[in-house]
Length: 113
Image 1 (cartoon, helix red, strand yellow):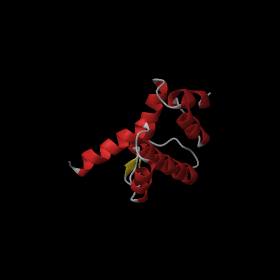
Image 2: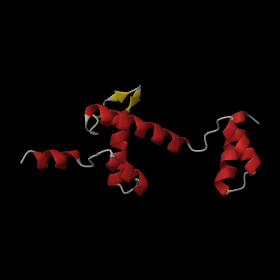
Image 3: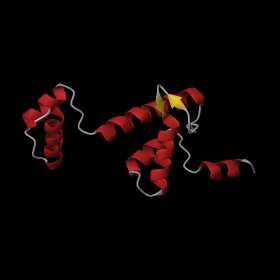
Image 4: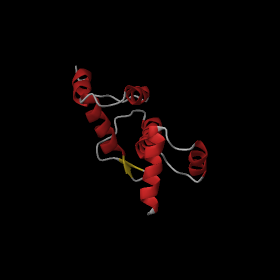
């Protein structure tokens, strides 16, 4: 069994609540990440906060990169998920807290009159 396959089995067992707690703790001590999505989302969110603090807004241009991450593309993906009703409400609220505008066209139109 290769390490990647074994680790994925451990992740599946954790999701099902079947992973021995002592093994779970040992794996966490050596840096196992249980959810890549949560880890990546959190990292990107922190980049967005940093951008907002520096620029005074959270309207990241679509092609803007922050520390090598295409932050604009990531934010556009969050907007698309919201439009489809697929964005978790807790994530939506966190994005709104830093000033994310969901419909940029509507906002631009509103501000021009």
